Length: 368
View 1 (cartoon, rainbow, N blue to C red):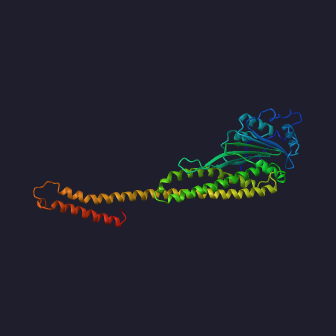
View 2 (view 1 turned 30 degrees about the horizontal axis):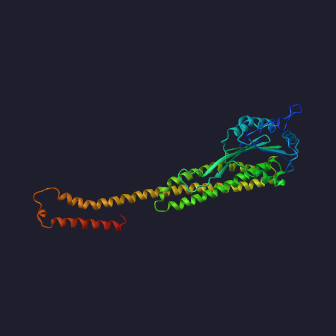
View 3 (view 1 turned 90 degrees about the vertical axis):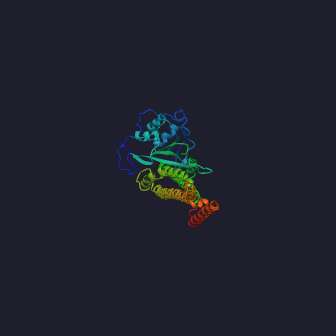
């Protein structure tokens, strides 16, 4: 069985182990106490009625209660290896294709449905502060957050140094009524967090574009073309994160699914609205940078034309004395001017006068 993309059509059952554990099956392994998730586990907790149950310190007990429908488990992982993800996949009955995507990373933002489990991939972005924008400046850095959301569990898998969900869990725990709606609330919170970062990065990139635009229309501003091209590439990085996510967000805002409460769908609509705003900004950035790049290339052509006119004007000025000197350097015997007493000074005067007239003529016509 293959998962559905963000159109989320009906899918066949995949026999999820987490939801359908048989009475005779061996007890679950304590992945936390056994050290199986060492190096990858960021945090985990069991939530009952929207509150973190601090009385439950055993991972196995948390799973048992989650299977009975008494709450849900939220496990956060950072760059787990293939073995760790395989164990998590087996524990929660995750589809092999989704686990494979989470292992390989570098996925396009998407939303897939496997029976009663949702698998979402979101690109995170971070603005890199810099003093001066250069041709090699890194402006936008990206990471990935993958969310497995099912009855009784949420598993978040982060890839990249800039995929942090700083303070998100703590902020959600301050809103028990929201968490009480179930795993769908966590999925919304993560999507909202990621899109809010898009807005922040877009505003910062806008400031960089304003600087580049103002510099481009200064004298010799065309020298900044390489910086414009670099910023255009960084905007493309942001576009790759934002544009593909619009379909999944629109689907989540209309999806009828047991994990997505009616109130949560309303919140997803708000996220979708913010995402559309960012998408429009990014598209306008790309168009504006293309216009700035074209303006810069036009300035280069204008500058080249001005240089050619200047060179041509000076060549024309120097052509007059060159021509006169060439005539009097032909060594003919019968050249009456050669016998005049002041011929040398007359010729120099003619040369100077002709050059002066040409210089003023070119200056008046803005060739010089």
